[in-house]
Length: 384
Image (tube, rainbow, N blue to C red; front, side, top):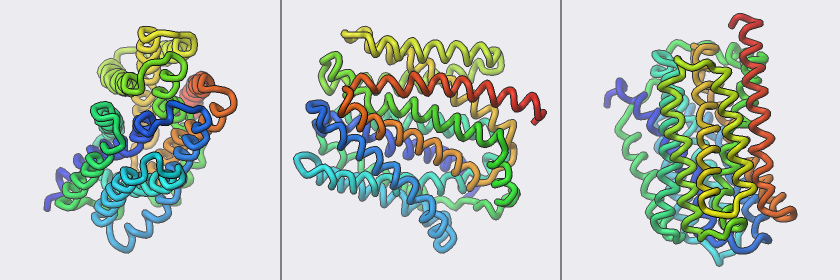
């Protein structure tokens, strides 16, 4: 079992990570949560359970990796995720909501275990191409989000979760045939050095930026179908299709930005992205028809698209070495922001209406623009 192509398989593993975490936003209409605003609290609890599982998995993953090895961790993460999806298929409505919250907690654990394993498996590939590895990981992640949404759109029944449970099993079979170089086998700084860097202003700014940006993206990803159904009246199936378009615009936008990143001034790109995202939020808030919804989704996807490539390039330059714990810490914090934002929206929407969903992306876009500006300023001041 060769290791030379294993790093590429590990990057592709982020497709499964995106697939697992994007599932909830797409499946909510199939579960019937578009009908009654009183159910929005349960939706918030679902996202919170997913976030708790993701955090709990971090400590568990390190113990499993040390005792059983990286190979076991990746396969086990896929098996846990498959069991969680199968369980969710069995406890779909009208079963009491907290059974589904337990399944989403387990799904968060599976996704968290997978992410830790993937970051350890990426050691050698990142050493060869830091920025490129981050780019490719983001592209695979976006493909997974799009795939999960389109699968739900194709069926719009809770039973689709049975089919989706087979996807982690496929990845388990792929990981079972590979062997990965662990962090200890490659040349990395010590964990103390990585932690020291994490305490630096630059690393903190990166972590905060990703926290807010993932919060922006996942606020829309988690609530867009419910928002469009409640405010515009389009069918749940059509609303899920709009969510698919959101992921499509986000993904293709990132591919386009990567192609022109070296040719466009980053300041202008950031300003244009912020304007596009704010304009998209405004359209979604004011529109009352399908064309307006599609336009708002387009401008939001286009606006959010450039942030990740800009951050990936900056991370590759600022932190050319690699430490799995360091990067998983930043990524986990970002995902935590991505899940806490839609959880908070669930509680707010129950009392203030689903229109409040637009609030977090509006504020978050301003914060992301400010943080990126601070990162560039810190880079000029320190020369790093």
